[in-house]
Image (cartoon, rainbow, N blue to C red; front, top):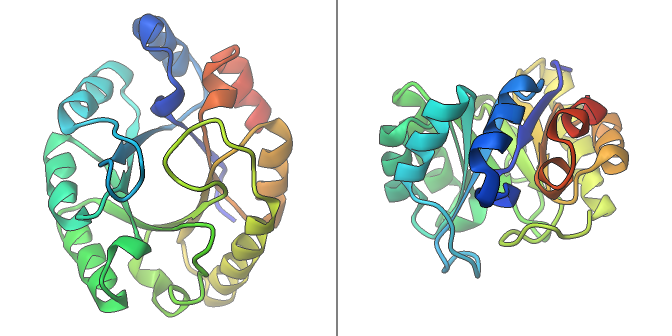
Length: 217
């Protein structure tokens, strides 16, 4: 398994103290910054546009880990790639079929970016298994996407174990990311199941950022 990466989610950042929190992130062991993009249609919430991503990239110096929770990921991916995204993750459920999903994976990689595919809690990961080499990561949602602060769904770890087994058998480098309800306890469960990338929002930004990130490593 690859070295563990923590990707704090700016969805939970305190925007009244944005500069202070970014300084703490820069002082932490976080390598990525998770950027949740919601369109108010695919999920019942509306968040950030590409201009804000430009600001975070410049201020933080971290790898921009963009999670598209949108109905038209092909169009929106182009906006965020132009804004400086390093990783684009979109939802399998937003694609018409697996062929459309793979086409978008190839298009994003062709632009020199890493690509991830995410699945909601009710979506199995089995459809992705034959094609893992065409993805840099798979994001397992351990809450229903759309809002921060939800409780961790432990049964999602079954998906992680399925993915880890397949990745190890085929000696792939595809990362397994998990997002939703991650804290010191649930993070350990996720890593034990096979995750190598943890997204954490409320747990990181509602406490001492540096200490919270260290506790996940």
